[in-house]
Length: 258
Image (cartoon, rainbow, N blue to C red; front, side, top):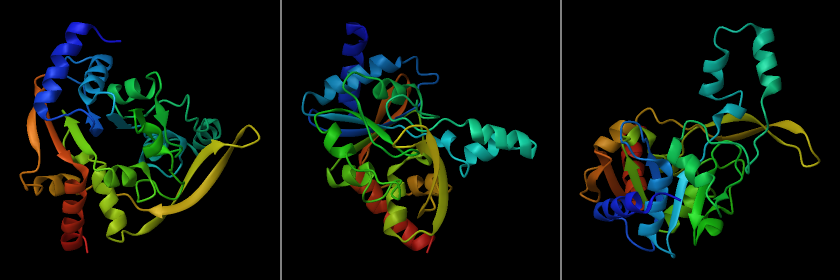
C-alpha cells in the first residue's frame, strides 16, 4: 500500500478534480514528470471512490499480434527468417500474467492489485478493482475490441466517468465506441492465444478498424462544458462522463468521417 501521507494528499487532489464516492472511473494516465507513484495514485483513487466505487484501466496488449502497428514496427528491417522467428516466439495472452503494454505504470498497478479483475480479450482487455469490477468486465468477446459488447460498452451503460492525467485526447479510448456506432469499416486481426488444452494457437477474427488518428481533433471540439479540469502532480488532469464523450464523438464522426 502507498504511504498514508501521500495517499491523503492525493485523495484530496482527486476529490477536488471531481472524483466522488460510488463512481465508476476509467483512468488514462502518464506519470512521466508528475512525481506521482503508481501505487499511491491507485490507492488514492480507490479511497476517493469508496467501497461502492470501481476503478478501471485499459490493460491492452498489442505485442501478441502480427497485425498490429507495434508488430510492424518491431519487424521493420528484419529478414523474413528473423520476423518468422519473432512471430513463433510470441507468448500467448494470459489474462493473469501478461503485463499491459504501453498503458503506463498506473495501469500495471491496478492490474496487479489485490482483488483485481481483468477482461478476457487478448488485445484490448481492461483491468478493474472495486464493487462492479466483475460485472463490468465479465463480457469481452473476441470480435468486439471496444464495442457495445465490450467493457467499454458496459462502462457507457453504467454511466461511468473518465479521468485523464497528463495525457491528451489522442488516447481517449471512449471515442472508439463511437466508431462502432457510426459504422466504421471492418478489418482482419490475428493474435496468439492460449489453447484450451494447453499450449498456444493463432486466432483470426474480424472487427471494426480502430483509428485514433483524429482523436485530438475530436477532443478539441469537445467543448460542451461537461469536463472538470485541474492538476495532479503538477500536470493537467480532466474528468468527464463517458456518455458525453461518446455522444460527442458520434456526432463529430457522423459529420466529419462520413
